[in-house]
Image 1: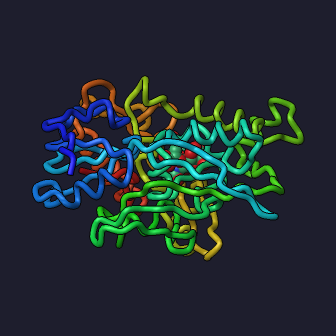
Image 2 (image 1 turned 30 degrees about the horizontal axis):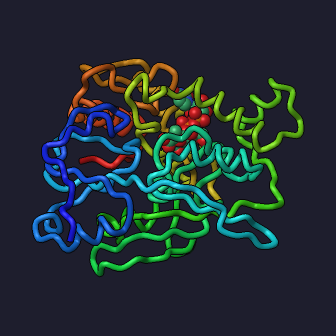
Length: 341
Ligand code: EPU
């Protein structure tokens, strides 16, 4: 057995998009299953609490992590097959999501263009079923392979097995801290159709006078909208939307609408309603405000930002203050999207 090249008291500052300076007691880069098997066989390492780290774009470090951070690095993208309906593409968990999406587009494969510019890694994408502009990972997902720490074996999960829902999957529940995603396979449709029902995308394309967009056109429109509305983590620390859009009953939506006629809501296929959390927060007057070095982004109230040197606790305190105001004013509980450590 080779010595495992761990690092101790390792700063995670450059490995989380909030840019929070917290440390991992033990840190290890993972390039493949051999490293995971070695960890599982190691007396000390196998006992430690584990944090699986991808691009660190959905993480709030409120303290040092007292266990083992496994930083997924395995990259590589390849076309693995095709049938009548789809082309199948597999990417390593450590691959950068946006780089992967652009690679598929360069090959002329449509399907992931609406998900351009989402920060993070391929391996993290299924965990919270990332989504934007009317498309979610689950819509293009075929299967993944993961290492199961409990029985030391490789698992293959298909779309149904992942139990995808809005920003949710089995990896946030039964398989939490247990399965480590190694690679993900997507089924990209041969009969591609633009998904441009989302108002922002439609407006952007019409401003560019594009009536029959290609996948590249849609990607360019999405990239331009995101660049305008969302802060670049390389400039201002953030984790994208900090809260999920809350889902309420149609009845609760109707009562809220009676009191707040401008309420933004979207009917769901099952009859419930999704409320725009950004609107709720904005109405409470939080947009652009700060508590210490933690702030609410000026252009989108759903995004919390690190204005420079914020601690994770400061961001969490701001989140709590927002939750309390939204609860008091609208009777709605906002649930954070990032994982808190
Ligand atoms: N709004 C306001 N004030 C604000 C922000 C939003 O009034 O400060 C209103 C907007 O005018 C709009 C509505 O709220 O009517 C919704 O806003 P927007 O279309 O910008 O989308 P969102 O609900 O804020 C969601 C996802 C984003 C995704 C976009 C586009 C969640 C939690 N967020 O944001 O995902 O990019 O739709 O599809 O579902 C992420 O998860 O990290 C993320 C960025």
